[in-house]
Image 1 (cartoon, one colour):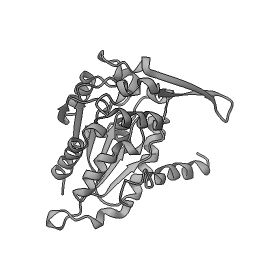
Image 2: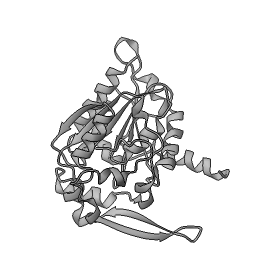
Image 3: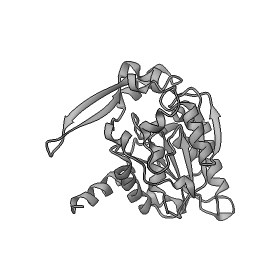
Image 4: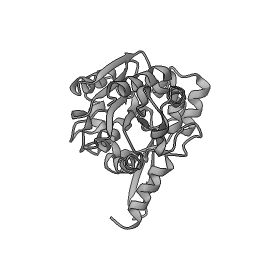
Length: 276
């Protein structure tokens, strides 16, 4: 790795702290939030997935903050599990004390890898998310059971990289975004989400996972039964395999936007259950 690369990874991680203006808490905020009995509450670290950004957690962040939890929403580069997990690990190393990680969609793959062998990560929360085993890919898991209509909604954009090779980013077509990704979100809000979506590298969906922190870390899962990105049957399969505490809700893939209280409640359940 060149000398510039670690700095780039660190920069990506630390950029997470600025977010959308609603995420609170500097990384050292854990010591400032006291739980019952004088115990510091864990920092909640939120990892967004593909076709979204940190603002997708806004409603969840507001509720967690109101309940006294320090929160950091990470900026996910969406380039591939290994490099995205490295960026998240840099941020986790900067946050002192116990942490609860929550990942949405592809963000589940990232937290699974980033939290491997990290004793300060007390619980994992998967929100309409992937829980891959080592060697599995997002594309492989999505197709394990029928129901995803994502391939027909994608808008690929090919570009030339610095070394002269080409790569492809994937967006969701804006006119199909609400139906595909956020059917239970108000139309105006879904339109804003479509305009702000961040693309994922096509290669990220076929890069195998190498870590599965859910094998050793207590896990919770929110399964969305009206999901057109990751079918509910796929989410159930992964959640059952991980022995995750599972909550099902009739929601779209954008459950953190449409049901922020429910998602915040599950995160808080994980925090309370794993308090030391």
